[in-house]
Amino acid sequence: MIHYRSILQSAIRQSSIQTRGFWRPAVRNVSTAAQPNASRATSRWIRRLIYAGIFGTLGVGAGKWLDNKIAAPPAPGTLEDQMELQGLQRVFDIGLPIVQELRRNPDYVEKDVYENFADKQKTHRLTSGPLAGSRGLGLQKVFWNDKEKKIVSVVFLGPGLEGWPTMVHGGALGTVIDENMGRIAIRHFPARTGVTANLELDYRAPVYSDNFYTLQTTLDQERSTDTKAYANCEVRDMAGRLCVEATGLFVVPKTLKLSMVGEYF
Image (cartoon, rainbow, N blue to C red; front, side):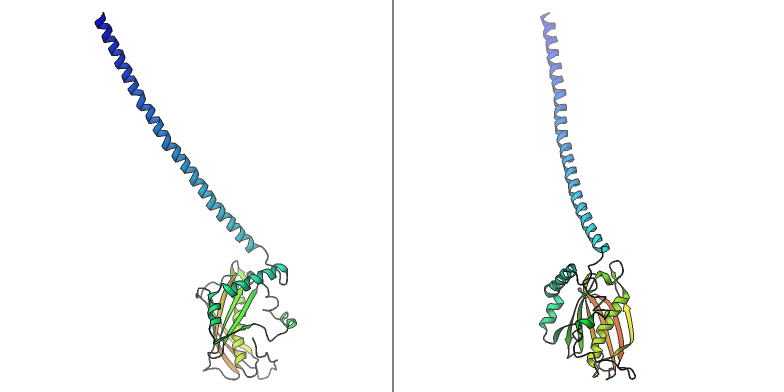
């Protein structure tokens, strides 16, 4: 009996050991498996928060941009318009490398546009009246090089000049180009007056609103006379990309009496 009892006890002990050995690894496996699962769940939540922040920021930015594009630009003469113009002047003074370069060059003289006209006269002109203010030609400055007979004009083209959303109307560009080439022609004529006889434009790249551009205009001195002036103009963005090329012919009418524009621009 003792022998069988000892055998039975030994079998029970072995069974107990095997049972404990069988369950322990399972418990360890459960605990070690739970840790990676919890880590992966935490990682997923972190990624979701990051994505939500990124797309939320993009959504808010796109909404503000779209709101600015849809909203009517400030009317000329209003306080909001004056604040916009002051901001444009600050960007012009300190934010445009081309302006700093021209101001350092002694061959160029900086001038305001429409200096030949009184304030009352400006309101009746297209570019200084209806197209004035931050929504239109928010800023125009002329840098005149008398040695080379060249003008570099820095202009801001506002959202009110758009023909298609975000893009400046080709006709508005033609108006600005015509005026700039006319300035150099009238500067050349002894009569200090003249009209456009021919204007040709080649649009090379989109011109986007709410941006500064340069109009680099030169006089063809070999072909020009006291009554005819040939001019070339290139419109470029602040990165130097060519957007528009233009040529023009300006004349002093023989039968039409015109007022003298003056010595300025």
